[in-house]
Amino acid sequence: MRRGALLLAAPLLLGAAKPVLVPDVSQREIEIAYSFTGARLLLFGAILYPRGRTPGEEARTDVVVVVKGPAQSIMVREKEKIAGIWINAERTRYRSAPSFYAIASSRPIERIVDERTRAIYELGLSSLQLSPASGAVAAEQARFDRGLVDLKRRSGLYYEDPGAVEITDDVLYRAAVTIPARVPVGRFTAETFLIQDGRVLAAATREITIRKSGFERFVARSAERASFAYGLAAVALSVAFGWAAGAVARRL
Image (cartoon, rainbow, N blue to C red; front, side, top):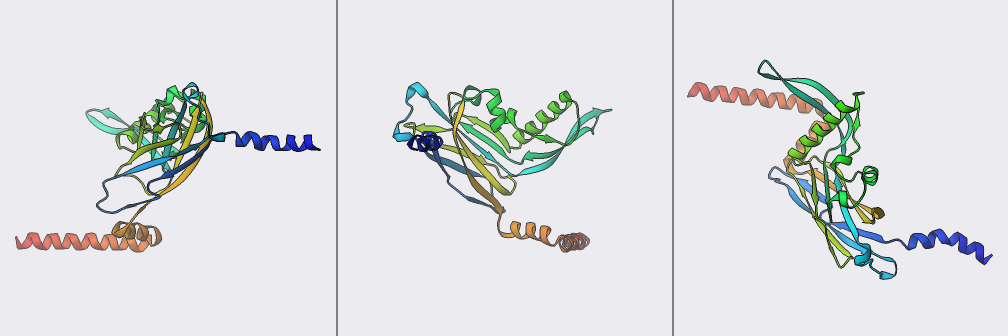
């Protein structure tokens, strides 16, 4: 009987022998107003080891932090120059792609985990699991994937920051992630991974909400909840502004 009880408790004892992450973020909510120029999000936390024993230098651990925005459908168009004019040539649509992606790590991610682990946990821009809707051949799809990542990177919505995670005494960690002014609204996730010898030992997630405030929030809600009335109001305002500009021009 005692032996059976020990066998049943073995999985629990093994689970308790693993380290635990206790993460947090400096802001759970970020509000976007007309004067919003971006934000600096601080991610920090502690690593709780079994019996309080840190691994030491002989078994170094790394911390990787990934901040993701809500998934969205995206159309990517490839431009081609014909007769001196740039026109839209090929195009492909993605059913699902992160609207924002930032990864910070204690070392370059290629030195922490292998390619297979990076693909499983989507660690790094080259390991993002995009969902194309078209049935393009592999080479063409890879070209569009690189183009999508490059566009997002140039707009500041995708980026990697190796070495940005600071670990103190093998227990405390912190990292800063820049939120650009053009960030989309929605529910974001901040995932933290504890990695040792290429294996993910622990993971934890915190949620962050980014939303519009003030007049921007009123306009966004009006467009969503009363789209027909919003459209009529926009047309009326355009006509009014046009009439006012014409009246001023006639007086001058």
